[in-house]
Structures are given as C-alpha cells and as structure tokens.
Figure (cartoon, helix red, strand yellow):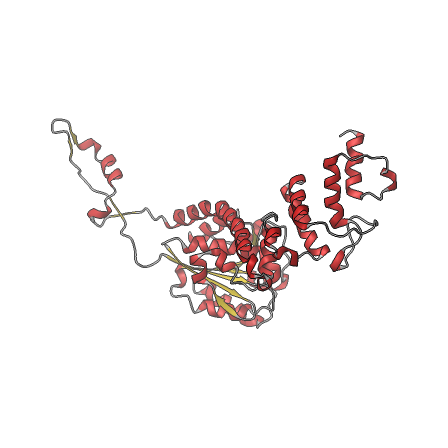
Length: 385
C-alpha cells in the first residue's frame, strides 16, 4: 500500500477533525464513505449516550436514513455493513426508524437485524409488518439453503431409509436393482429377462423412526441460536422419518411445533425474546413428549443461566440420559466465537455423561448423524476444547 492510500485510510478512520491529516484530500467516493461513517461514529452518540469510535467533532445529526443505508451498502463489504448497522441502532437510537417501510427496504438482511426485529416485534406498526417479514424470510431462506441439504443427508444416511426388505410387495419393487442383479438371466432368443430374484424397498412406515425434541431458550442473548434452531426444526419437521417437536421457554413454556411445521418465519415471530428462564420447567414438559426413549433425540439449546430449580434440571436430564434418550446440550448454535454460559452448570451436566458444547451450523449435520447412529457425543465436547 502506498503512503497516500495509507494516509487516506487513516483519515477515514479518525475523521475530519484530525489535524495531522488535514492535508489529505478525499475523492467524491471517499467523501460519501466519510459522511456515512461520521454519521455514526463522530463523537455525539445520540440516544444511547455511549462513547467509542471516532472522537471529537461537531456531532452532526443523522442524515436521511434510507440514503445513509444505501450509501453504506454501496461502499462497504457485507460483513462491515452488518457491524455499521448494529452500531447505528446502538449508538444513534435508530430502532424506531427501522419501522418505516422505506427504511427496512434499504437494510441489509442479516441475522443480527432479524434478532432486532424479533425483540421489537410488538412495536412494529401494521404498515411495516409485511416488509419486516420479507427481511426475516430472506435471512431464513439463506440459512435454509446453507443447512438443508447436509442436514437431510445426515438424517437419511443415519436411518438408512433405502434399506431393502425381504417382504414381497409389487408396489415397492426396486426395479433398478432387480434388473441389474438378474442381467445374467437375460434370454437372447426370446429377448426377455427372467428374474431369479426380486428386490423390494421397505414399505413406508406409519410410525416415525425417531422423535426429535428441540428445547430452545428465549433469552435475548440466544437470538442467533433461536434463528438457526427454527430453521433446523423446520427441516426436521419436513422429514417423514422424524416426529419433531419444537418448544421455546423463558419462565413459561410454549409449544411452537405447529408454527414450525408451517413456516419457520411464523415461528420466529412467535418467539418472545428476553425475560427470565426456567429450564427445569421446560425440560419437564419435553419429558412428557417422550414415548420411546431409545428412539428419541433431545436437544437443549441454552446458555444454562437457570432461574428455576437447578437440582431438578440435573435430575431430569439424568433420567432422560439413563433411559436411553440421546441428550445434547448446545450452549449456542451460531457462527460466533465462544459463547457466554453458566460454566458450572455445563460442567455438572457433562459429569452426567451428557455432551455440553457450542456448535456452528456447519457442524450440526455431523452431530445429528452421530447421535442417530448411537456414537459417543462427548467427542464433540472435546473438539471444542
């Protein structure tokens, strides 16, 4: 990088009142970038009263928000846009302005923005609800594209849904395999294949192979995990082999199974972020959903800050584990770094033989497949360390 470019970058970082860089002349494009940054980081931090980032200056008021959002998305890479948007909400008190349809259309859809809309869903005016749903749906669709194929492959691979059956049933004949295995019996004179043996697919079962229960903590700090979990639940719910239940909790328990089956976006707007937590109460409800423990996978997604009965929670988790339920505690399901969680409770759960760790969405298919195949899940706990 030449010296002039380096000075220009420092000028953008430090702002227009930097005397040492007063000789730096910005191009039209850099001036727009500078104005976009200055609107958020120039000294006056607006409604929040915090102070960080650029210092000093005259504290100019926030420009037209729709134009500002357009400029930010034009001149900065996507990961930087997400950071600037989040800072704009925190430092300048722009939350209410997000409820204008014109503004929402210019917001970059990302998981952080979905979390903000979920937290403030009760304040979204009628005129902006559809635009807000469109923003949430665009993020959910992206996550679905990322997760669905590998998660489906993991489940079908573990359950071996194409296993062959010795029971004769014409409608379930595996013609491809039957023909390939009997090619040696082809009669050239009559030009006919005379099968020696027929092969059949297993008959479709009315009973599900496995029950999957997702128990999701609604704490505000779990927003990213909730979004990924809702997509996971929707994928599971669409698979015939799985009987899927989706439960969310704070101090009360809400069964969101039907909403998740219909549309993960509906489920997200059914979540109420924030409030206390009673994990024990929610686990008790989930226990009542278990019919065949050895064919049940229970995934608790929580940072484990328990406001309920701690000993009761450990007892219930241990009962499920001892009965053969595949119990997994995900401290977070997100792309962020190491999460904040109750370390002592996580250790107590781990001592029960139950894996307790954070997981990225990309790691999830491997985890689910290992659980359904009966592998030791403590390996994932060790990988995190």
